[in-house]
Length: 321
Ligand code: 8YV
Image (cartoon, rainbow, N blue to C red; front, side, top):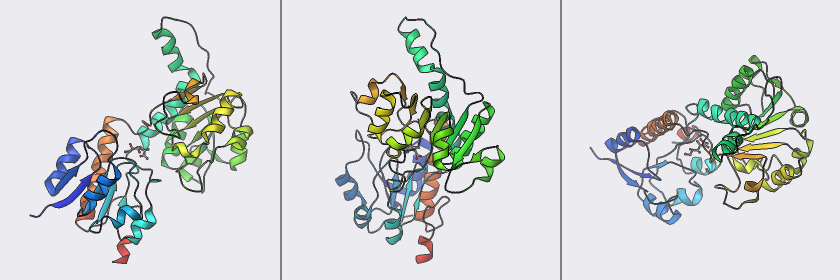
């Protein structure tokens, strides 16, 4: 049987990779860092499938360079790197990996808040460097958590917050029944900023949401607020966040994502005492990353054989044929 020609932008997990190899002839980028754009476009010239393992930019140029492409399967739920309309116009279905990473990402998001609130990372650093001493944080119990972006991950974070005895308010494009059932109360964005003791950002990045948290928004927050971003760095105006933290306009920030990302060593944010940053590890557990890869392979193989993808972002593409 003829195998499908597929490009992989990076290595994936053995299970997923073996499944791809069963059905596909593979061009795999194993170099250091992300695949260079020229190399990718060159490989895509005769590719039928693209398996994207990271934040590869998918736009009209890439799609034009790939005339035989029948599917793009990405490991990751956020797709701010993808021009979905261009995919649809080129008749190419695009799939991400929602669902399978919800619990892991919610754990990390709430974990960031807890670590910052209780200074777990600072305590360890003191002990590690021979300076055994107490470090005081804040209670989460009884505090008001404001979740901006109440999707599946936001709802899973709300469950954790409820178990920690927090009051939950949220802002979202639409009301979320699952969140309301947990006692979370919908409030306008500005009210959330003014009343929350902790603010968590889980909004997908888009042209509309870029820079959602800037100078004005930090100024509205309580000076005691703990701010967490686990979505995309672009949601936050980095300079405004730096000013807010250094001038004590807000108390603390915990970020899993930054802008720029990776954050370069020597960046001003890294010199602040009131910040905790992790290297974009929301979905980074063995189990979850395997589930993401398996779902992406399922989407890839479905697309190659002309079948509907399990988690297609632009299913209308199938109506066009
Ligand atoms: C990474 C994420 O993008 O799913 C997302 O949107 O931010 C992360 O899971 C993913 O690890 C990239 O492959």
